[in-house]
Amino acid sequence: MKEFDLIVVGAGPGGSTCAALCVENGGKVLILEACKFPRDKVCGDCLNPTVWPILEQLGLASAVRSLPSTTPAAMRFSVSGHREVEIPTTAPSDEHSYHEERVVRRRDFDALLAARAVELGAVLKDGTPVTGLRHESGIWEVMVASGEIFRAPRVVAADGRNSVIARHRRFYASEAIDRRIGMQTHLPHPVGYDGTLSMRFYRHGYGGIADLGGGLANLCLVANKNSMKELRREVEDHFGIHDRVVWRSITPIARAQAKEPARDGIYLCGDAARVVEPFTGEGISYALRSGALLARILSESNGLNTPPSRHQDEIYRLAHGKLYGKSIWINRLTRFLSEHPGVAQSLGPLLLKYPALLGFLTKKVLNNQTRGSKCRESH
Ligand SMILES: Cc1cc2nc3c(=O)[nH]c(=O)nc-3n(C[C@H](O)[C@H](O)[C@H](O)COP(=O)(O)OP(=O)(O)OC[C@H]3O[C@@H](n4cnc5c(N)ncnc54)[C@H](O)[C@@H]3O)c2cc1C
Image (tube, rainbow, N blue to C red):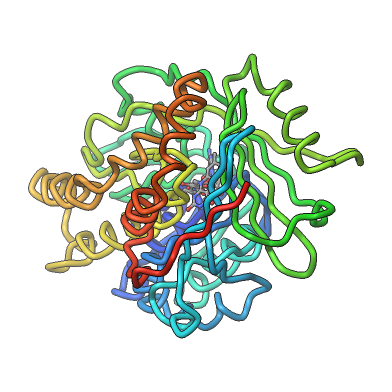
């Protein structure tokens, strides 16, 4: 049995950020990751501009900018059968500022974050799925598939939307009832795709396409499980995709947030604590920010060297609630539209008639000054 100050389960953006910042503050940290890295992940590959301060803190901002990636200058919104509206995201002079949205492959991005945690001193065991845990005399014993056991007084569950730890310790009030599924593929630019980051409500769900650079695009779809086949057909027709495409899938898309993000030395961050709707491309940012927030709270006042306390749990609960706060109402609106494709088909065209309103909503999500740039409409 090996002993650590902290065991982080999951080396996604939330887990690696938390581990890197805890180890930087002197903790002995182990990351247990189910997949062998580098690994792909069902995601739109879009980084919201709010990630940059955390990437700066991790010393990774320039490294991320050096990865194969693009900086979208605009977002295009559409509803099938209706006009398209383009909203500028960054002015050209913003390209290297905190305001930039960036499209970067998760395989590269997540590998960079995990490598940073290791560089700072964390131990990473990838290809090591956690299968269970138990509490023995104030210490968590974490079991992995090989039968090995690792021990620490604290465990961070950063193992995503289907968190084994959160489910095992009953952090969710109920199992997910969301009947939607997400699908994603990387493919060469479809003929006629001009590289603009585009979100579209189709009759059976929604889809987004983003330019990864080098002629590669990310295509993501979200629909109710029983409509996914139709959505795929609609999207393949829309982009004229005739070649066979290899899709990855994930479910659920939404789930009730954890009853509390911390209890008895177990802390949830990223999707494990709270899942946000993919449409607005904020999940990675919330994972990074909640991972960093948790690391700060765990490291404060010699935190990792003292036993877990209710007081520390409460501090994290309040700060976590504040992090998400009121800012996710637009995200909730997109979830509602996604769950009700009929409403999206009626309300979407109405929204497209008011580009200034769409510009306002986009600016809110990007937390960005779009500088009153003009929106463009086309049919
Ligand atoms: C269709 C779709 C599109 C999306 N598009 C975007 C987007 O464009 N931009 C954006 O910001 N967000 C997007 N998101 C959301 C984003 O992918 C997540 O919010 C983000 O990945 C959460 O990060 P995380 O670190 O919490 O979890 P994850 O990234 O899910 O990482 C969890 C890690 O834990 C590991 N793990 C799981 N179980 C175990 C176990 N038992 N033992 C050990 N390790 C385990 C996994 O292998 C994984 O590496 C999208 C989501 C979906 C579904």
